[in-house]
Image 1: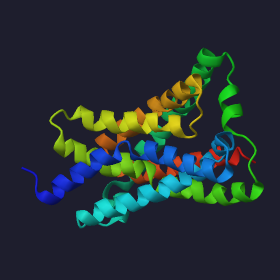
Image 2: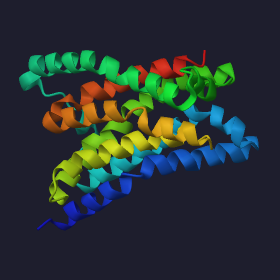
Image 3: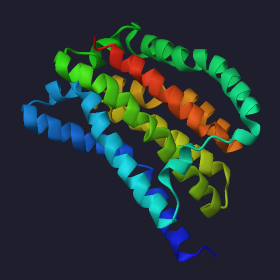
Image 4: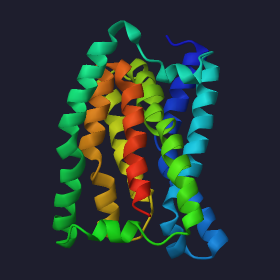
Length: 236
């Protein structure tokens, strides 16, 4: 039997599963209201993501405090096996290179017969002031929001709550992948399919790796931030 605080944290874990997808839609809608154009709001997806990341961090603080835990403990590095963790992470990083880039290339060929279409749809013009600001804030907030939400908070709670343990990995991996169809949300069927699937193999690699070795979470979180800095840099 789970105690009341654990039941509450497990309940929050299920709520958090779709939370980021919904936050992306909500904040893009708010941006669209401000600029009076959904099409223009699509180009500000870095801002949408940053706002969603900020809310995710607040929710993680709330969830950890409910359990009388420190939110920053999610990023604690295990120094007892540091060299082994770093070695495994470096090997996984090398393995992940084709897993990150190949799906996007082949999906874009399948859906459009042109590997350049997704980038052309995502990286429109944005004011340089916003770009320089979000170039820092976007990757920083996503480091502390996305992977900690799915694999630092949700996955361990689902593992305790669900009888079928593999669902504890599958559900966060699926929702991590699917959330991208709303970042940005462009009402184009091919684009939605592309964004929902393009990161699925990489999400699976991260999820399985952290499930088997939780100490890898802070390393993957930093790697994620670095990768998204590269994505933000595309606006320049």
